[in-house]
Amino acid sequence: MQDTSKQYDAVIDTCKSLFVKKMSDYGSAWRILRLPSLTDQIFIKAQRIRGLQQNDVRKVDEGEVSEFIGIINYSIMALIQLEKGVVEQPDLSTKEATELYEKQVAITKKLMEDKNHDYGEAWRDMRVSSLTDLILQKLLRVKQIEDNKGKTLVSEGIDANYQDMINYAVFAMIHLNEK
Image (tube, rainbow, N blue to C red; front, side, top):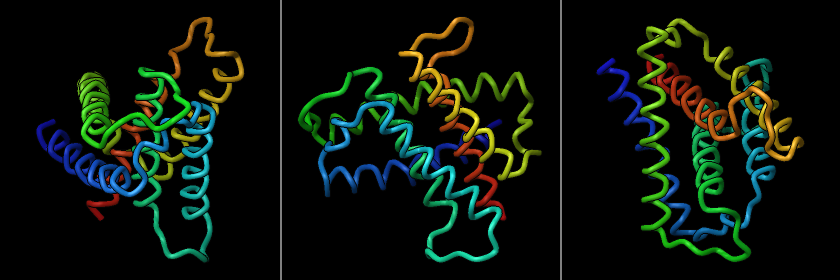
């Protein structure tokens, strides 16, 4: 479990570094995005990963890693939007956004640690393609919950699905880094 925690932190450090750099370039323009827009951005990234995994020819010189980073960062943005609500104008400094990012990561990592304990690190025996499929399944669930105006009868909410997507993407990146 200790290796997983360190590996998780290393992946998140990479993702957070890009998030902070983009905040410097663009500010918090993403704060105007409604949840379905963020969900669609994540969906595009996951679909591209699946395409890369299935197709022999690549026409854009970017691999799976950059797309998994996008899934993680957009999912964290979505969790921040769930907490703070959507705004009409960018309203966060890089420092504020980074603090919110770190808060969501801490909550999501704790969830990973709890599930990892109960499941015995089963993800280590999974394929990256299976993790991709699970992310796509979570996205389809989120889209359905969004279409239901956020209401569920017995299922987890949108936040739990975003957290699972983050954790699956981190696991995929750990696998890709070990190759």
